[in-house]
Image (cartoon, rainbow, N blue to C red; front, side, top):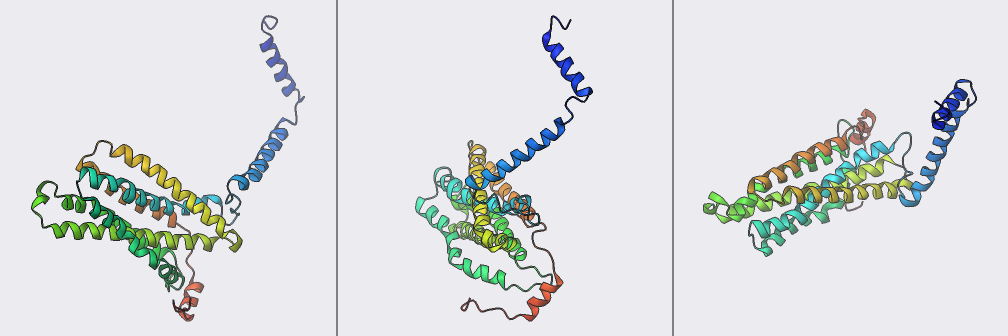
Length: 284
């Protein structure tokens, strides 16, 4: 049989060599190869990904990637406002382009206050010794509230269905409130989230961790753009409500995951917060 099938004969011979101990170092060779491959990847990583070497035993990459989920929610919000609703409000809802431009510009009102937001989180006094998490949670609630009322506000603004008899100022004020809430939430979450990320690493690694956070922002924008485009390809008012409110729920879920066990409670830090006198914002 093996004379007619030399492949079988080869396997039989190789198997007998292993059984007889002719290849005792096979496992060791595999371990050495795995170590070599790991070292090559570690050496190649920083060349193409400058932030790949910021992970440490205390702050593993999995923890940093988990924290970076807050940037994914920021990317989702930016795509929803600037990309998706920009088209939907003009094309499907027949809202004047000038009014759409004003609504999309409202979230930028909070941009000049980002320095103040960061300072407030730096000097925050908490009984649990937490500084960043309370602000990220407040920003998350703002994002959720804005997305929760946004689809209904836009439908009232456009005069859809029975909303045609509703006073115009109601639609305008509700839509403005929704965009303001989302804008405030985005600025709070991103500002304080980046501050938390830099708190976790050494000072020399802070630019790298910020780079990682912004890579996740771009990834979140790309993925959410593809999903929103696919879901709203066949537009209906009901589908618009589902997509925007689904974004609200996903935002809360991802931000809670990002905050989970990132900032530890500390009685010592809480006591220091009560004793220390915070530096005024003008001096900071």
